[in-house]
Image (cartoon, rainbow, N blue to C red; front, side, top):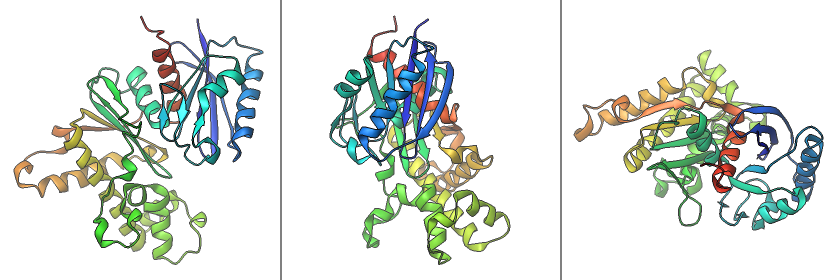
Amino acid sequence: MATYISFDIGGTDIKFGVLNEQGQVLEQGKVTTETCGEKIIATLVDIKDQWSKKYTFDGAAFSLPGFVDVNTGYLKTGGAIDDFYGFQFKNELTKRLSLPVELENDVNCVALAEKWRGKAKNVENFICITIGTGIGGAIYINNQMVRGHGFMAGEFGYMFTKNVFDIEDKATASMSFTASVREGLRRRYSNLKNINSIDNISGKDVFDLASTGDKVAIRVIDDFYNNIAIGLYNLTFILNPEKIIIGGAISSREDLIFNIEDKFNQIIKSQGSINDFNVKELVSIEKSTFNNDSGLIGAVYHFLIMQNKFK
């Protein structure tokens, strides 16, 4: 059976795994992401060389942040990794790893994992959204990934959920600010409570404070859910997906889907022409299947597609 090494490169950690052609994770681990691009590549080579003592690899698959040209392997942007902006990643890694290489955007990999082995296996129209430090998205319509003209489709974080013309710092009206854990929860609570640094409070802290009756935390969380619901409402009527699959650490919260659906229904009830509908009649909102393994699994699925490994 063919074996692949897969990497999910994030701004904080590099997750890596050994997977078979069925998408099963045989081995895995993670290391801290260096800030220097060359050091990151050297780390990838070291990991591959170590695991090559035990496995013979048929290829290397990558999940990466930013705008990824899947046809050429060129990174237009690289998320938090400055050295990956305007970088021909595929050619360099093919040479350094001595393996066939394919790469895909990180949230697209989440969607591909769901399509291959998860909750979208038998679904032709769905979207994924990841809620974390920022907001990421992926669009899968008519049984194919939608990447767009410049490989920027699915960048839901740039969508506005507030009136941009009423705000001086207009970026703060975007979903990446209003509905992300870092900005929508941690920074907003810190600002309202005059806390010097958001490093002194986590998203979990804000939820814990709300459960004790902290009125500021309750207000911040309520607005956070409002903004997620606004974004998902817009996407539902633009793309008409059968499912919306939510990833990110926050997806582990038991009450996440209930709260989003409640806010979604409030928006529906305010719209005269559709106020008899319920969110569940329009779209199924679900948590992602694989959590931290999504990027590894989706990257291998993308590799197999690009390398024409499916009959």
